[in-house]
Image 1 (cartoon, rainbow, N blue to C red):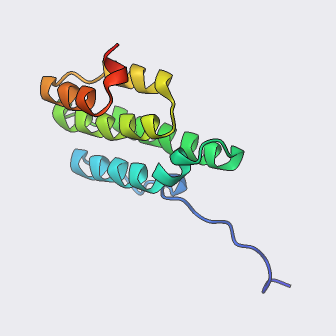
Image 2: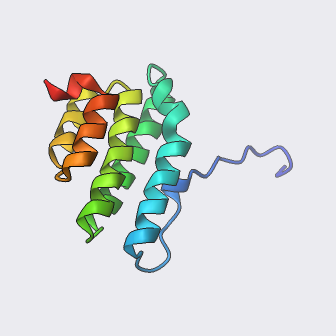
Length: 118
């Protein structure tokens, strides 16, 4: 009986990317992924939610590596750092924080998350 078959929820980070993304589209997709994964990051003590957060963060990082414009990439990484800090993933957040080169974005991240400055 297919009527009662449970459908699995398709997350935005699990959807295949149709063709190459430009920098603007990639940054927008990262922002959308981080917004969609924030509830999973907040509930990271649940195994299923932790796996969802990790998949989302991994996909967002893979997309961020393909952004050629430095400022757009730094802003996208800032969104990923926010996601990691929501999940209390300090190790990943610190690594990503070091990848931000724009001074004003680094200052904004430090202001939002003072523990990363240490």
